[in-house]
Structures are given as structure tokens and as C-alpha cells.
Image 1 (cartoon, rainbow, N blue to C red):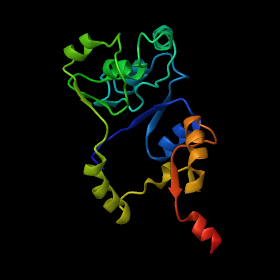
Image 2 (spheres, helix red, strand yellow; image 1 turned 180 degrees about the horizontal axis):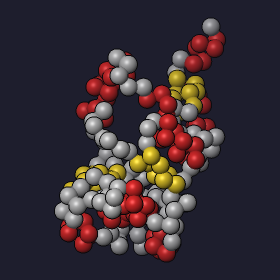
Image 3 (cartoon, helix red, strand yellow; image 1 turned 120 degrees about the horizontal axis):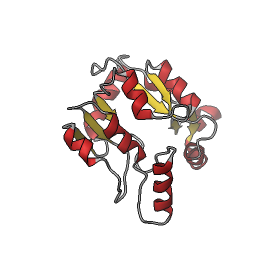
Image 4 (cartoon, rainbow, N blue to C red; image 1 turned 180 degrees about the vertical axis):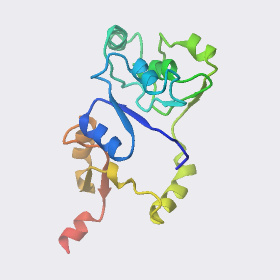
Length: 191
């Protein structure tokens, strides 16, 4: 909607990668490549993406020595988060690009590549999405048929199943991507 020519989605779950592909994105399964940053550079003619989004934050997964160090520091309460994806976003983003961080971070982190961030002249945008600003125009686009976000909904359940579905979503069970709690589902069943 905002004019992106390419979208590259990175994940490790096949069902989420397929969903991204069905939405028009190119995909990378980070468990199947040696180096996500190099893979992104290879895909962009060694330039890097214009924009990189860390939508994961403190719960990021990865592999290798640095990721292992983050996990150990987190368990020892020396570091609060796992800034693995943030590091990759900074390293992969093109010169003059933007790194957006809507993923949640809780505290202090180390090994952030501040040198590349500064030397590339990157812009960083952070914070939780301002839903009050975007909700009305997005709902209007859905109502007018301009966008259809239903492809991300994997489960639609009555509201009394909310506790169960929080666990299903948290534990990534049953290929759960998004849950819609429908307060009228029980009423419809009874009628």
C-alpha cells in the first residue's frame, strides 16, 4: 500500500514463510542459511534492503556463538534481551536506510554494532505502533475491500477459549499465526 517494491520476510516456521509468500513476499528461512545478512546482501545486489524491521525484539532466535552468548547472558540476568535480529538489521540495511524496531525490548543489551549504524548514516525508528492513529483508516480500507488481512488469521474461536488460545499462540502450536476472538460465536451456535 505504501509502495514497497519488494518485501523479504525472515522466519523459521514453514507455515509462516508460506503465508508470507502467498502475500507476495520473498522469504528466507534463517535456519537454512549460513548468514542472514549476507543472504540479504546477495538478494539486493550487495546493497542491502532500504528498510529493515525488527518485529521480534527480546525473544529473537538465532544460531551461532553470539546468539549462544545472548542466551547465557539472559539466563544469568546480565542481559535482558536477545538483540540478535537488531544486530542483523543494522548490519544488513543499506547506507542511508532505516531500521524500524516495533519489537519489544526490556532493558540493556550489548554487542550492538553502533559503528556500522553511525557510519552508514542509518535512521532508527522505535516504539510500539500507535494503534489509535492507524486503526480507523485501516478498518476503512478493510470495509471498502481495499485490503484483506484475513490471510493471517489461523483461528477464530469463541471468547471463552481465549485462555487456551493464548497458550496455543505462545507455544506456536497448531500453526497458529493470529487468533480472532469472536464474542458472538457462542450466541450463533445456540441459535
